[in-house]
Image 1: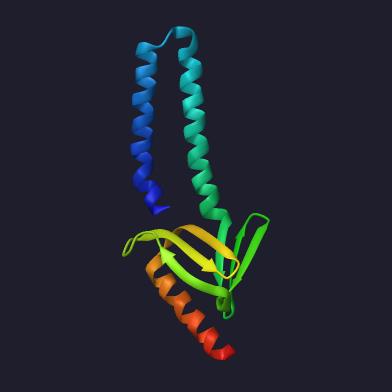
Image 2: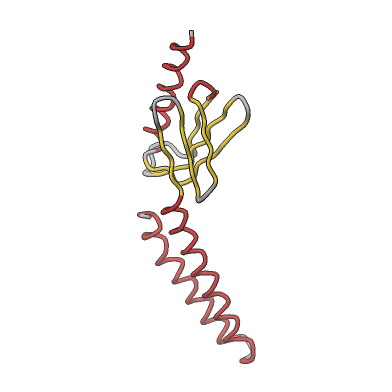
Length: 132
C-alpha cells in the first residue's frame, strides 16, 4: 500500500492528461464516453490493488508456507523448496519466486523480501536436517 500511495498520484496525473487530450482532440460525441471509460478503468485498477492487498494472505508456520486469496488456498512444505529467488535485492518490497520439486510459484509485492528469502532458506535447510 505504501508503494501504491506513492504511485497513484502519478497515475491520476496521467489520466488527467489523457482526458485533456481526448477533450481537445476528439469529437464531442465520444469524448464523454471515452473519459468515463478511462476513469472506470482507473478506478478498477486502484480497487484491484486494494483488494489484493487486503485479501491476499501468506502465513509462515513451522513446517509449511500457506497462501490464501479469497477461496483459493495453497501450501508449500519447506522440505519441498528447491530454491528461493527475489526480483530486486535490498528493496522495500519485491516479488518472491519459490521453486519446488513440483513447480514454481511467484508471490508479488512481498515486504522485506530479502528477509523472507533468508528465513525460508533457513527453514528449508532445518527441515532437510530433520529429515536426515
